[in-house]
Image (cartoon, rainbow, N blue to C red; front, side, top):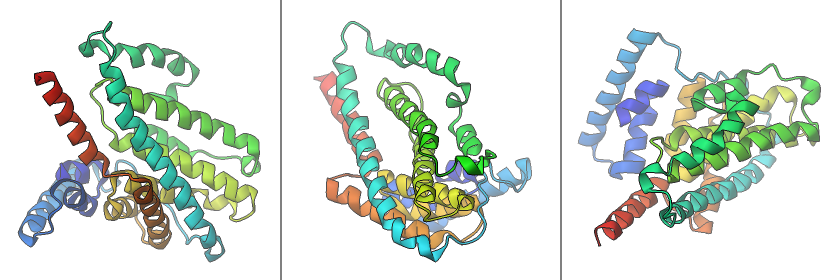
Length: 284
């Protein structure tokens, strides 16, 4: 798992931290060294095969202005609340799907399949790999005049709602997928929303919207997964610079703390418990 993450994102250290924070909860040196050997080997093979450029490369240059730091805890609070909503909905829909008796459980995936057709006709970019959408959001030639416009919020909010709803439906209807990349996509969309509000209020200039995007990705992921070090290191390795580490630390740990206050738990741990519960119920 750690090696796969390292290979996918060219993030060997984040891969090792993910295994420690989310799976083993164990910092024994012998295990950590073995995991690091696996992640660095996987990353090395990926570099030999595909080159040095990461699969999802988000280059962010320059430091976020210090004058904007006062707004970072507010972003963290917002992302912490949104992270709790994500966890709550994801864990609540599974029992709801189990109550659908007219459609066999093996065919529950028909529900999101039917609903996704009009979405694909509306905008095909909302379908397919999450990395494509993140890359498009990051690399779009945004019209500077559009930033700071309240109308400009509508599209990211619409995309956010669509991706959120179908992330929930897909996972809870047992479609073979995951939540790792969808969480990063939602974090990016939330980052665009936060950045636009900050630009509207003249807290930052439009040129700093990528900074808020990657910071929000780290914070949202770190809160939901309850793996802040993994999130910070993952985004740091993805952007290729340590310039955003301090803002990411501030926002990520505020979001983490807010989720903790609201009663959130590590999402993979809760999902494992839920899967075991339903497995035991099916046996009974």
